[in-house]
Image (cartoon, rainbow, N blue to C red; front, side, top):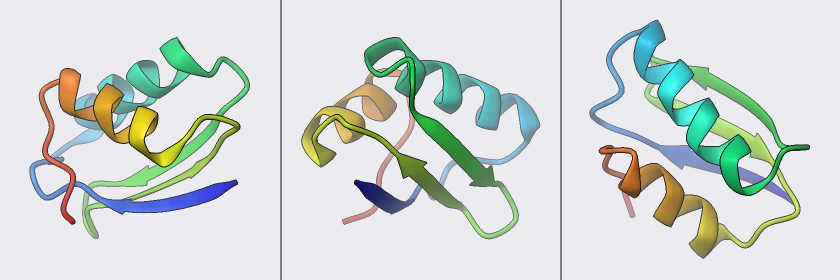
Length: 65
């Protein structure tokens, strides 16, 4: 499943790394592409959208509805 999420408080490449690590902690095979300029995160995962959003939120980021 492919998710496209908006993360308004993702500001830099360190944020991208943190978000990527948070997603890969619950799905090691996930493919994460994030762009701090557009605030968009594209994730190819087997996990549910709820689980992915929870992981990103737990890492300290906000996921826009």
